[in-house]
Amino acid sequence: MVVMDPTLEVETAMHAGGARYVIGIDEVGRGAIAGPVAVGLCLVDAEVGVHPEGLRDSKMLSEKRRVALAPLTTGWARYTAVGLASAEEVDSIGIVAALGLAAKRGLVAMHEAGARVGDSVILLDGSHDWLNPALATPLRVQTRVKADRDCASVAGASVVAKVHRDNLMIAADTRLPGYGWSGNKGYGSAEHFAAIDQLGATELHRRTWLKVTA
Image (cartoon, rainbow, N blue to C red; front, side, top):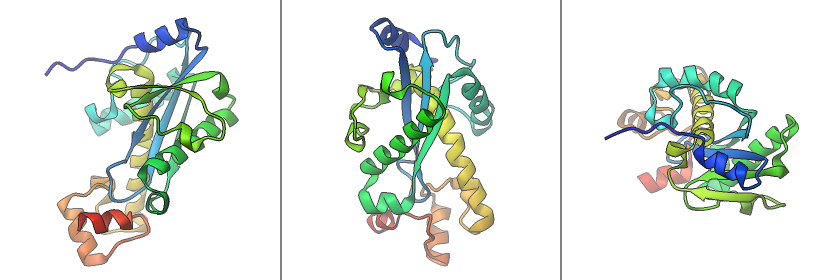
């Protein structure tokens, strides 16, 4: 299979159509059984310049390469942010609403850093707008299937979110040892399920998901 590098063609067309800023958004950790869901945001304008060499959807990169690209992406984009929703929130309101909550938190952080969020068009990976239902004031959202593969702003968002979330899960090894967080990052490996059977679930686990899995 030929792997295509993302470009700024979609974002450039959106700028040409009147969008002053484009915020690429992608989520990480949606399918995990533990840990937060993370939503990455990456704002670009028409003058942002060439994105870092080798930038791709985080799922197509090694962990080492993602770690190297995350600060390059943050330095390239006008603004980046990561919003989180906890495992408890995922259990309480469901994964789709939790995605919206995490994205809302990321947008607030970006706004507080000085980004003109209200003047931006959102480029959202996928075919479903799960963002606007979480917002009091709707934003202009354009969904695109495989945007994380094709669009540099969304690929950048995925890398920033993935590295941020992975670091949180790696840090959990010290506080909650025995679950292999550094390796599984909260996903449902056989070793992870064996640890839950032996040690029980923690506050990082999505309890409703464990019941479904069981």
